[in-house]
Amino acid sequence: MRLRAGVALGLVLLTCCGGAPETGGPSGPKTRAELTASRVCDLVSEDEVRLIYGGVRVQLTDYAGPVGDPSFDSCQITVDHGTTTSPLRPFPLQVTIDPVTPADHEEMLRAFAAGGMGPSVEIAGLGEAAHFVAPGFLQVYDGERVLRVRGGGHDNAIELAELVLPRLRSLAPAPELGTEPACDTVTPQAAAVLGAQPERRRDRRTEDELRCEWSAGGAVLSATIRGYGDEVGRMWAKELPGAETIHVGGLRDNGVYVPTGGLYFWMGDQQVSTYLWHRPHAPDADRDQLMALADAFAPILLRIAPRIGPPADGD
Image (cartoon, rainbow, N blue to C red; front, side):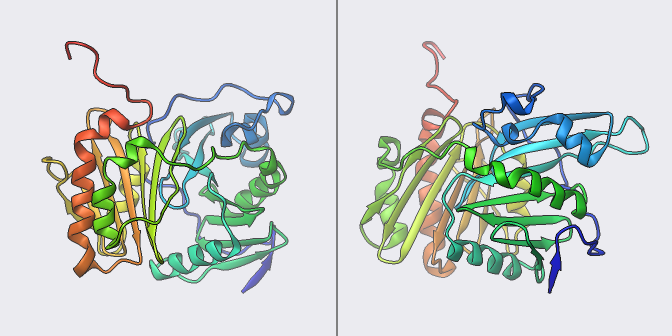
């Protein structure tokens, strides 16, 4: 079904559920002249959001994630309407940091449908392709980026996307891909998952993430590590079809395995999080090897994760 942007769809509002993710703190006030677009929150100002969503106060908070392939950088938007009858319901504006091809985007849409989110509703005239993949969940593809607005009302989501899309080109690109020594440590376990020695590596380190990727033939395995908690990612993993709570690195119930090839786990006081993704994935043949990779990461995780330094002397 195709609808024009701005036309009411009759969709049920869906706000982002769950607690707010841990972040580096709220962004300060911005004006358009001051935008540098190093993070997603730099693409909008509090005043611009307030013109769309109303309210007496708007807070924009940067956070990295959700992690995966592709990974996203996010801006959590909180609109305070100044009343006790309208509770705060933060929702994210998210943009991919990895280049996304049209074929990748089509695969993402198919994955939404396969995950039980239902058929998408196409929105005409918004980016190269735009869909509501669930009530209140807008996804737009444009210029090798995917933009998502998850919550706050579908008409507002369209208006926010229309505001942000022309600014995506000013968003800083992700760092170059290469080979990270931290990823070398677990390459033997990665080879066991792939069933062959890796032929290609695509690693990357940013301020927020360490990304390792190994591939052989048509098989790809990636590990994305964040140096602080990702409550959104944790809830997302637990709600996926077939999700299984697992034990990683000698701890209990600190991970989730998904039979489509995902494994998410977290460790330490700051809940350092790691997301493993393997495709194609055969659970009967590959689950144990993916678990072994997670266990191999566990002893070094707090040392290699971004924003987490080695223990101080005497610790």
